[in-house]
Length: 235
Image (cartoon, rainbow, N blue to C red; front, side, top):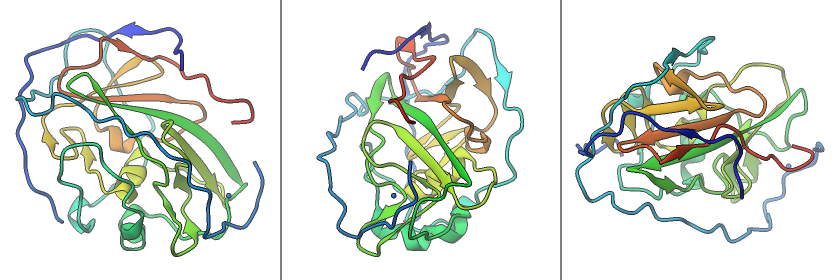
């Protein structure tokens, strides 16, 4: 899908990697256990076998403003994903991750807050898929306030009460550790952008707002950084 207003990424350096093992339904409608599962194409991030250096390069930098209070205690998140990407949704572990993520098991999507963001992830310049059904436990028949329905990278934020949510809460329920210096198994400073604007600080503390285009890169950034996303009508 075509993207608009790309910006050149800055600060590309030689990749270097350090690995560390980690602990291991817009309308209000009932969520059915038997959801129609669309075949989500998994794009395997290539070239991660080489060394990875996570850096922040030149260009305009801005610190996160209005960072949320929902700090994640990653040591309390069970069985964080420690393998190379792609990272599966791990919906079977969702019940165990609700408490550390500060999220709830809902039987229908909330309408007091209903917004959407788009998330792009890269490792060494290669795209990493954000999978379908993050935040949806089909077997148990519930979903959380933050979830994905497909592998497009669109994050649905739908809450029965008005409140703020952070990017870290989404990554927590996914089981992928995210800090200023960590994305999954990779350690070092991350490069990240919101709506094409370079940011500094901890991306996990980013408060989710309508139609954000969020880009996080570990190691070599992509050649161009998306600055916007063409959300489908109605989202």
